[in-house]
Image 1 (cartoon, one colour):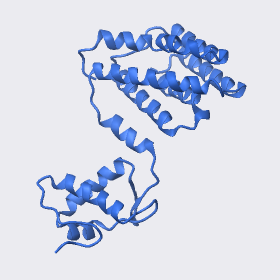
Image 2 (image 1 turned 90 degrees about the horizontal axis):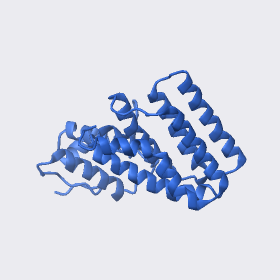
Image 3 (image 1 turned 135 degrees about the vertical axis):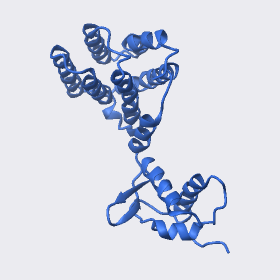
Image 4 (image 1 turned 30 degrees about the vertical axis):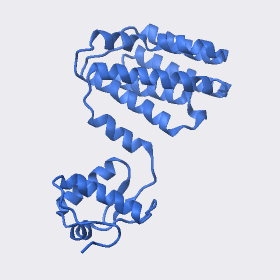
Length: 241
């Protein structure tokens, strides 16, 4: 007998993956929206004919993907979609080669080149003041010889601020993911900024370029901006991160 509510009894060898896909189908078939509750583990286990352990594992995957959220003592609910949970899960579960990291940098540069041209048309003096404030903060951290991991955090805020007026949540989340990969390099002590004076100068040049509103300067500016990490990735292309 076929169970109701769009669910089907599972006999596939890959039970956990099947459980995950079946729960996704249940969500779609029943048009569940943000805030709606999912059946309990025991209810799904009985309906699908698989163990509660497999259901629980599927729930963990859905939560990592940002599809559901667990409310202690209340159950599991559909959450508002957001990119952050999905991308953070991706960044913390990937082990990549340096060649892969270089490809990530290439993608980042291509994205930023396109979006910088859009952002420079609408940035205001208030935005430039905030970028300069973040630059001063990075300078003080460098002078105080604070850890590079903390510098990466402020550096990420700087780049996200460039695009704040575009209101593109995915772009800001991706920049955060790119920064997470850079933190991996920092933590395992494979990558360090080679010249902090030049690092600060490159960010000042980026602000000056944006103030000029000259789109023809964007490509060369970004090539210069990322040259340190490009050089590092070329020199270490056979290494695993």
